[in-house]
Length: 216
Length: 216
DNA sequence: TATTGTGAAGTGGTTCACAGCT
DNA sequence: AGCTGTGAACCACTTCACAATA
Image (cartoon, rainbow over all chains, first blue to last red; front, side):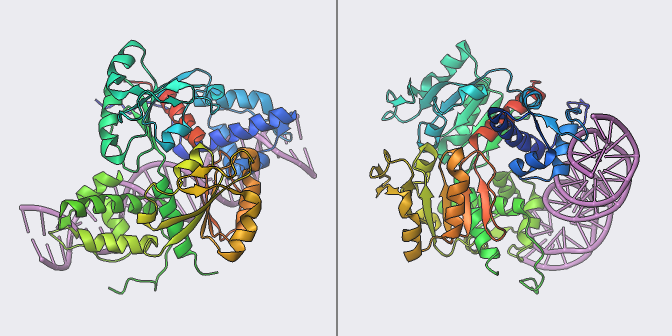
């Protein structure tokens, strides 16, 4: 099996991340009623350089006009489509802890195309409590629920020890992507996407930066 | 071992992030009583390859024994020192929202060397409420408090519109590193470290991955 | 035999610089 | 003149391959 997935050049993960930031900026400018923006402005919003912005966008097509800039509304629509935000995504959250709570419904995910369909927990003390308008369900029901209505994205918000197990269950239940909030690396079959949000790791990185950059 | 600060090539950010994952694994193995671990095991824990692990570690010195592996406890100590976790770090959190709450004291940060000294908020409705054993303080007091006891790390957990302003204030008050929980890029003077935790961006990345690699 | 440490080669993302439109 | 689009140069991180060592 010599299939390398998409024949077309692969998109750099860093490009995708910047597109998300560009989109946030574009929507803000759209509110302001701006008609066009130069790559320089997008660069500032995305923590990149103007050349980087142009490279990122040119990968998907020519959206700007030379001498003018990029049209705000059409570009926002295009970026939204590129990221796949033009269709809705069903999200299930497992783990109603502090981080999981940030993913609870009502935080504005819906406007961006993410529907938080259910929140589960392993801890009996949490099951049945309210979480952003939803009642926390017993994680034991996960498989049965998802068999009826599959989800696209699973959020792993349980403690480290339980994280890999929950990930395995979510993958078996058919989710195609995982957002991992536990401070461990998750092993998943190829074909399932994972992104990590690891607060401990970020703090460690800051501690290192302070240590290393201690000279002035 | 003429390998120390003599030649200060820069450390790759990705190396630092993996070191944090290696450390988590080492501490777990130490609990289990393991004496040594091969690079293969560390690689699995860090989502890397054995060669990558050896490169990462060899950057800082020779900690392993050929034919045997790496001694668990000494390596854990070394990595902790490399990351700068052997000294305490004072952390102040601004924004007692859902994400900020995940940083509240009690989540085990102290064991890793991070002391959450205070939690602030701009919203009068939140000021005075309890957050993980601390009373949420008025963000207006930030400068006065930090003048007395400076903090090393500031957490920006306020809404997007307020994020840059809070970042500026934290930097002016002397923090050397920022953990940004708001979904925007922060502009800070060079010399101040920033790491982003952006849930919206991670979900966008997953949406893109599903769209692009939708094959199963 | 097992596993580390590391120069060398490889890969892929970023920056440059300028041609091409407006 | 101003700004985009893009091949090419550049640079940084990763992987390879093997000598060194237990």
